[in-house]
Image (cartoon, rainbow, N blue to C red; front, side):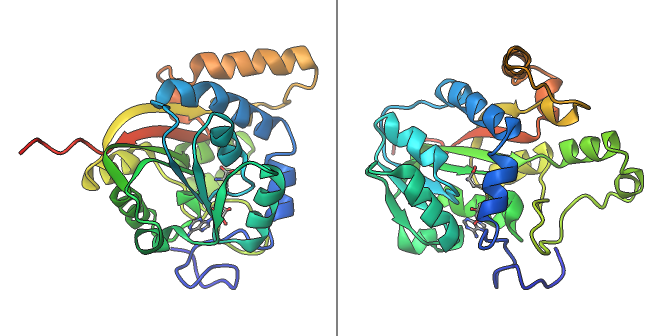
Length: 265
Ligand SMILES: C[S@@+](CC[C@H](N)C(=O)[O-])C[C@H]1O[C@@H](n2cnc3c(N)ncnc32)[C@H](O)[C@@H]1O
């Protein structure tokens, strides 16, 4: 749990007010973001059963996933607690018919209980003080048989990238998480695969699919610049995103979690 910081919400979460520009520039402005979006574009149709069902998008940020789902014919409801991010999402979404609400995840059972056949929550849990409770909340929003597309920042990948960058003392002390101070983009609650599996089970969800997003890029000494090399890296990322052991060191872990159907009475 990070120490008190004026940048955290009363619940201890890092809402992205004041971070929209930095997030848009440093995460989505370069190859990292390009790879993430290109990989999701290929992985999501394979990992989810997409039938144009209504979607609740949680912590929707700049609106890329909401736009992608809307373009595939899903009615999308985007929720996001940071006003600044919601404004950016509105710009990005243009005239797509996406309903938008300024709400944190914790308020969704009361405000938008559904139940929803599809809930998406990408790169949000690692910014929360209590990601375990958040996963239980997301599980409670699903219809029986409903799918949760969950993506989390991988703590094990963060350790490896720190070692690769020479941050040896930090890695040795296991001081990997951010403190939610200033405009830092190091998550306050990076997660391990073991935690996700255990917490999903606790919340009554089955782990149906898993992939690693960016299994190579974040460890490169010199990221490729030429278009052909960037394309080759994308093909490698794609080829190994679901292959053991590579997926385990993806910067993000992407899951399809399913709420089982209730047994017929
Ligand atoms: C790293 S961004 C991810 C945005 C988007 N989902 C994506 O994948 O690009 C994290 C987002 O989580 C939001 N967030 C922080 N605390 C939250 C909470 N309690 N409930 C819902 N979203 C939250 C932040 O405001 C921010 O927009």
